[in-house]
Amino acid sequence: MNISAKIALLSLFLLSSCSKAPTTPVIEPVKEELEIETPAVIESTELTADFEATVGGLDRQGEGPWNKRMLLATSTDGLNFTRTNLVFADQANTPSMVVDKNGWIYLYYSGETVGEKINAAGVAISKDNGKTWLHKYVNIIDGNQVKTGTDPDVEILEDGTFRIYFISRDFKSPTPKIYYAEGTDGYNFTYGGVSFEENGDAIDSSTFLIGDLWHQFTLVGNTMSHYHATSEDGKTFTLYKKEDFTFNNESYVMANEIQTDDGVRFYAFNLRDKNFISFFSTDGYTWKVEDGSRLSFDKNSQLESKYIKDPAVAKLADGSYIMAYVTVIPE
Image (cartoon, rainbow, N blue to C red; front, side, top):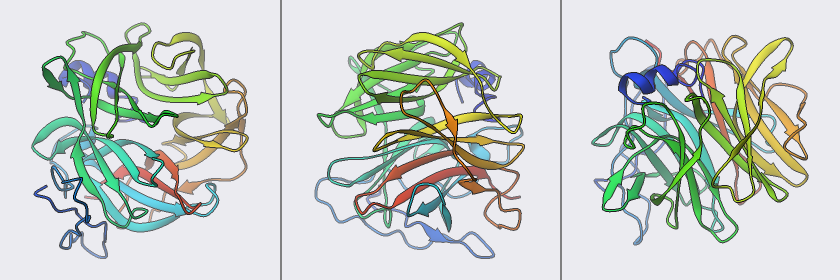
């Protein structure tokens, strides 16, 4: 999610429309300089990489994925996270993460440079709890055309189907809409239709099922507010109300959520406070701030600058947690 590529996303959409070589870049430690080592290869006869993770940003003014970096952190409880100090990818933004029944991690993201594509979505797949990753394009199949989307928001259904919510310039809408598509392999999706639209400014969704009802939160254009929409089938959503999430008189952006045994934990960020906190709900309607900070900006880090944002968290097969988050590439 975004307050500078997330909150400024509506203007990016209107200007430019929302904006492996079978080897896998190993997530690598960076010390004084960013150095990418020889990529590790996922041993698989079923998957081949479409591209390698991007290294380095673009010299361009303004906010966008071109100057962003995605980093990783880990936790034993989903509340207290520790940096890995490993660079996942540059020019990567707005992550969403899920784990399938086999324990494979699927880390989705928007990117300025995604392999040979520009302003597109990719997914990195890991079979070993995040030690190695294989990057593939996210393809939205609409009839005989293959399209792309940005700001991916992905859920895995009970039958193993992957459902992706996204925004896209490829559908020629003059204003942003949340679309959805479904697939079985995690990277090829068949277009389903419009999932949600409201006043032409609903962007960057986060969607989840609680009980028998689906909930979707989107940013309201260039504001700190959210549209809260609901759905019985998880495909077409209707506005419930407009909501703000605050803590200590500061507004927070709801980024991504995870299911727990007794409810839903929503990770949120604030660019001014430069930290992540979490809200918890048992019904999707009433949210309570949980104590403490999940992660805070490290001003002494050589890997981060300005702020941190867009936390996405998944629970791994071994019971631990992994977080992907975004910062600005240091100059």
